[in-house]
Structures are given as C-alpha cells and as structure tokens.
Length: 261
Image (cartoon, rainbow, N blue to C red; front, side, top):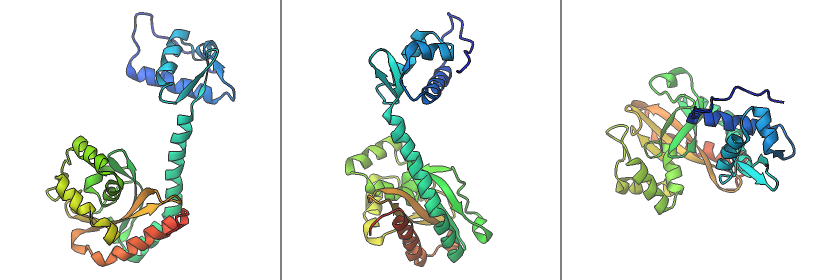
C-alpha cells in the first residue's frame, strides 16, 4: 500500500504540477491492481480526499486514460495501451534499424540518423557516426526539428492529406530555420511532389547552414510510415549519388519490419 502523503491545507489550491503529480500517483496505483479499485480505497492509499480523487480521475475519463465503472470503481483505460504500443513501435524501429544505420555509416563515412515524428517535429532517436562525420554535422539523439526543414520530416508531410498539410502550415507558419528554409506552402508542395518519383527527400541547408541531408522512408508491415533514415554531410561533401544507398538501407529496414515492397 502506498503510504498517505501530506495534503495541502484546505485554503491552498493545488498547482497544475501538483495535479499532474497526483494523477501520475493514481495511475501508478491503478497499475498495481488487476481489478478495478473503489474511489474511497484510492483516496485512502494516496492520502487525498475522495472528492479530490474523484475530480482528478473524472477529468481524464473522457480521454480514455482511466475508465469509470459502475459502483464508483476505476481502472486503467485502453488509451494507455494505445500509447504504450506507440512507444513500443518506436523502440522496435530503433532496435531493428540500428545495425543498418551502422552499415550505411561504414559505407559512406558520414553521419546517419533515425528520426520519428512527434507532432509537428522530427525527433532523432538514434545516430551512427564517427571519424570525419562528427565534424560540423551534429544531430544529437533526442534533438528535435520542424517537419518542413528536415529531409525526414518532408516524408511525413508528404503522407498527410492536403487539409492536414494546410493545418500544419497554419500552425507553424513555416517558420524558417535558415535563409534556405521553405517558407511558403507553394514551395513546400512543389518539393513534396518530387518525393514519390525520386524516392528520397533532401534538406539543402534548410535546418542548419552548411549541412545537407538525404532521407528515405521506413515503413512497417502495414505500409505505414513509421520513421525515416537520413544521411547528413557537410555541404562541401554533399553527393546526390549516395541517394540509392540511403533508399536501399531504408528498404532493408522496412523489410525487416515486415513491409512487403
């Protein structure tokens, strides 16, 4: 049993951070039980008034994080299963892709990055580099960049419907990262139209001056775009002839994930 914690004084209003902390504590507690838990039992174990626990849990019931059953009992919601599957999917992609990233790095001597979409950004979740590739080209694992300024991000934009892309453009304003960034929807649409035929996307110093990238898509067994692999080089070493190697590596990773091409 979780030991009760000191509550706020009656006149104190919990901050947003306190509410989140309490929600996490409640989710952890629900995870410890295989069966639904009564509201009063939850309140006793976290040391909060039943009314507070009721308010917190019912606020997240519509999102599916928590389910409320008859009789005032609660259990974890299916939304957590969906979110967990997304995290597992990313970890699986990383585990499968890692040796292929290293092979492409060994073949080119350049930095190779694995990126996934998180909202309006690309997040780099793995990197293979060393030697000369470490000079000037730095994509730190965990770093983020806008979809429209990255080669991998352009693949995710290309997969969107026209209305989804329009919404992205409106939300982000296509803010530039460098003078070379695409900042109008017309320019972006023209760039994305090339992707199906070329099989790769380019970042020509659009995210970082002096750095150019070639990216190809990684798909799972359903054909869904789940990640992108990109080759990053200093502008003076940029070579479009390396595009087939990037495409072949992405295709190999996709096959390893069960994609039938």
